[in-house]
Length: 167
Image (cartoon, rainbow, N blue to C red):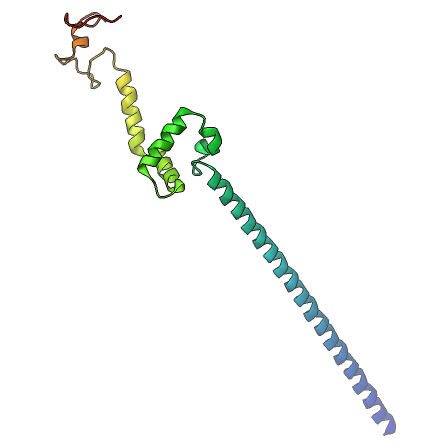
């Protein structure tokens, strides 16, 4: 009986030790998991911070440009200020007084690629290709009477006698 009792005690101790081991393992796993999560959070924070910094840098760069919307007009102010066109452009924009430079840029881009502008460009080309001065672009041969250039059959325009020739 004593042996049996001793045997049971031994079994009980073994079970107790196994249970303790198991608990220790669980604790270690939990700690590892927590550490991993902490590391993940730190990494995510760093990434967010970097993204924010990049965005700020991009915004600062865009503010330095005249038209931040499209690369064709993304020249620094100083370089554009040298040319006459930029002066006239800035004059026009001053007259229009857009709320922000960026909004002007967006409108400018839309105007460049809009269908109306493309139609106008096509019209302009077809007008310049007209075969003889004064002829309408629709192909009809009618020439307006009041157009003095087109009345002469030759290329030389008819000049009224009252006007002095300057050249």
